[in-house]
Length: 358
Image (cartoon, rainbow, N blue to C red; front, side):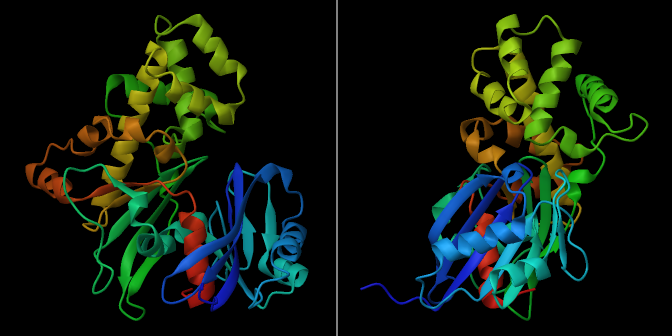
C-alpha cells in the first residue's frame, strides 16, 4: 500500500516558450513524485492567476491533504521581495498576490527559473540519479550529505539560464544564487566566430551599437541565429533545399531541424559544431569564475534533446581548451553532466514549497 503523502504542492515552470505545471506529492525527506504534470505553450496563457485557479480546481480537488502551498518559477530576474514575475523574453507579468487571491492557497514563492533548477539538483539526484548523464571522463555527483562543493548550473533553452550552487551550512543543502549569466557579452575566439558574432549583432541586436549578448548565440534561438549568419557568410555551405526548410519553419522550430540534419547537411553540421563550442566556452568561463569543483550541470531544453551530439566529444574538447596548464588541469577534474529530466525545475519548486528554503 502506498504511503500517504505528507504534502501536496502546486508547482510551475514558466519559460519563454513552454509552461510546465504540476502537483507534486511529498512523503519523507526529498521523496517527491508528480501526481499530475501538463505542458502548455506559454503564449497561449493570457491570465496566469486565472490559469492556476482552473488547474488547481481541476487537478487538486480530490487530493488529501489539500494543496496549501505553491512555488512558481519563471524565465526572468527575480526582484528582492519576490512579489512579481516578469518574463525577459515575453510580455508577461503577474504578482504573487494575484495568484494567492485567485487560487486560495496559503503560501506562494516566486523563483527565477534557474534558481528553481538549482533547488532541484539535490532532489532530482535523490529521486532520479539516472537523469544525470556524465560528459567528462571522470567525476561523480556531489555527496547527498556533508559539505557540498560549489557547482554551476547552465542551460540553453529559449534563452540561457545560469545559477551557482553553494553549500548552505544552516540547511545543509545547496542554495542557488540568482544569476543572469546568459546576458553577459558573447566572447568569440576563432575568426569565423567573430564574423558570425558581428552578423548577429548587426541583425539581431536591439541596437547594433551594443555588445552581443551571449544568449543570442548560446540558446535554441542562438543556434538558429548561427545557422542564418553562416548561410550568408559562407553561401557555398549546404544545400538550397535545406536552407528553404529551415527558413520556412517558425523560429522556435529551427534548432530541432538544424540538429536533426547535422549528419547530412554541411551548413547544419557547421552551425551545430560552432554552437556546441560556444556552449562549451560559456560553461568553461562560468565555472572558472567561482571555481566550482562540484561540477557543471547542463539543464535547459536543448542539451538533453541532442544528447548524442553533446556526447560526441566536441563540447568537452572545447571545454578543456585553455592556454594555462594549471587551469586546464582544474578543468579536467570538474565533472560535467547533462540533465535529461526536463522537470528538474518543478522538482526544485516542490523542494522550496515544502521546505521553505527561500
